[in-house]
Amino acid sequence: MIFRQLFDRESSTYSYLLGDERTREALLIDPVVDSTEQNLALLEQLGLTLKLAVDTHTHADHITGLGALRERTGCATMMGSQSLANCLSETFADGDQLTVGDIKLEVLYTPGHTDDSYSFYLPRTDGGMLFSGDTLLIRGSGRTDFQNGSAEQQYQSLFNRLLQLPENTAVYPGHDYKGWLVSSIGEEKRHNPRLQVADQHAYISLMSALKLPNPKLMDIAVPANQSCGAVS
Image (cartoon, rainbow, N blue to C red; front, side):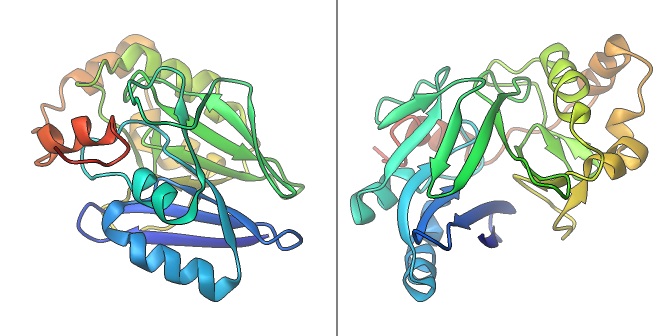
């Protein structure tokens, strides 16, 4: 498999390119519109055809590249069935599988950061790869105080879904603000301060105490991302 972790410096967003070496088909997870030209250039350099672009959830801190990529490449665009986006080729739901060539991603519904938050798991003999969106971050977790977020749901998504994966599963988050690239399920279990809580009630209290400011692009990004990146 061809794999690239891509970074948008302005929003500290990670995007992920997965390419199948046999068919030369590829998918992009959480593309940023400002990186469209770079993404297209990379696809051409690697000899890949983009078949699918997906978002883990409706982002509030950057504008998605889904629409621009579909316009330029003809790829399909997908988000979760809970999304309010009106421009998607299809939607996915918990238990579905995203297939590009020989790459088969398992779709996991992991609400809490938003009500349309998903993660994607690629099983492998070495524990696999988890693309956790904003549900599980490296030494953190996504805020739960807007877009129908829920600390209760996020606790369930973390402790009853993602942390049940093999401990050697590589964790690739949707963001990182410290420059860290990858972690693992076992590492996050041991060292992520958000996960060192006694129970669900303690997690809800922890998240309620954060009092974070809204993302500066939220009022622009959310409606734009419900239109696959079109800004009115």
